[in-house]
Each structure stands twice: as structure tokens, then as C-alpha cells.
Length: 314
Image (cartoon, rainbow, N blue to C red; front, side, top):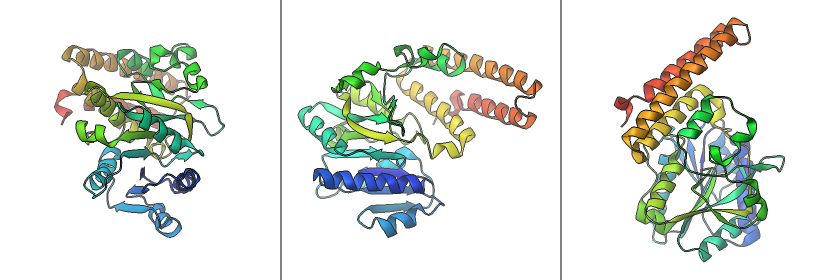
């Protein structure tokens, strides 16, 4: 089990308590790793003092989600007895009893499954979408232009219908939310580790696209439940993470889509950013947002567009 953490001490503590309790409850054996991405909130001391059975790697710099997970997976892959599975888990999650055993049981019976994800729940127990279709231009349109709220949770926006989760039976998906996913070692050995060109966002989508191109399958297992508190690390730096999101999307599409798609994507984003600028300008003129906030948003929009230039790919 690999938990990549950054400045979410209180959530990390709850996450580790739930993971260790579920492992004890089910009798499943496995190592728990925390890769700390240079937190400054005492997360590393928490792990050392309260969870001595957990293996901690304290990084001196924030190397990103993909690189951190890869660091641990490389260690495990080259160990004398590498695990059959890697369970990648965000620190702002809480594993409910039986979830790990349920995911493992499914994977043991579905040998061509590369990834199995649980059903994610909001803290109030309501359903949180955790399975998605691969994104495209329609999802990009949804990000910029207001539409009827029901459309945001529809298949048009890459969502799977709620009855599939409520039915309680595993169903095939394109990719899960990267907050919780069990990954088969043999699939990783065939396809490779995460692409470290993604600092944050879209790395699980890229991975699942590569798994699927190699003939592997991806599933959601709704009998397994994990509570997700949503983006507790990234919410601390909203402007930076927004820029990173669009940077990662551009990298994803550059790897897997045609030049025509990429041209259409950039054109749509350009129109969308212009629409955002005009909308925010009106808000600022009416005093709904401050001039300082308006200026900050413009900086973000311009930084996004800069990241979408072909010369920025590396």
C-alpha cells in the first residue's frame, strides 16, 4: 500500500488508522508505505511516532504524485518478494472495513484486470463519482461553459450512471479517480510505471489508457467502500494546481490523441479562457470580485494558455 502525502497531517492520521484497522480486520498481509512530499505540518513526525510499523520515505522536495508512487513501486518491484498488487491511496481517504479484502478478492478472480477501484463516498455517506470515461472535447466544453446541472453528472460528462454503483456488482470502466486504486503488479511490469512527466493530475488516466491499449481491463468494485475528503492537499494552492491540471490535460492529449484533436482542444480552451476573462471582467466591474482577485484570475488564465503551447511539452 502506497500513500503519497503532502501537508495533510490530520487526514493522513485518519487514513493510516483506517488502513491498519482494515488489514487487521481482514487478515490481509502487506506493507504500508508513506511517501511524504516535503510536508511542513509535522506529517513525518506523526508517522514515525504513532505508526512505527509504517515504512516512511521523507522526501526533501515535492517530486509530485507519479514520481512518488513510482519511487516506492520500484523499490518493491526489485525486492526479493515483490507484492502481487499495489494499492495506491490518497491520504485524504478513510478505508471502510472489508474494502481491501473485497478488492483483492475481485482481482484474484479477474485475471485480466489491471486496476480495481472502490466506490468512493463523501464524508456524509453520499456517493462520490469515482469511475469515468476517458475525457475528450465535450468534457473540456463542460469546464468552461455553464449548462444544466444534471448534464454535469451525465454520460456526456464522462460519468457512469448511479444505478451501476447502487447495484453493487463490479462494472468495467475506462479509469477510476486516482484517490484509491488497486493495481496488478504483472500489468505494471508489462506496461510500465506512471509517466513522471505528470506532476499532478491525469497520471491515472494515462496509465489506464496504456493498460487498455495493452489489452488489460479496468473495473469499479462498488462493494468496496472508501470515504474521500476530496483534494485536501491541492486545495491549499488553487491557482498553481489549476495551471497544473490544464498542463497535464495537454500532455495527456498530446500522447494519446491526433494532431487534429489537439488543435481543436487548444482552440476550445482559447475560447473558454476568453469567456472566463469576459465573465470575470463583468464581475469585477459590479464589485462582485475585487480588482486584485480579477488580476489574479487573469494571471492564471494566461499561465494556462502558455502551458498549452507546443514548445512547453517535454
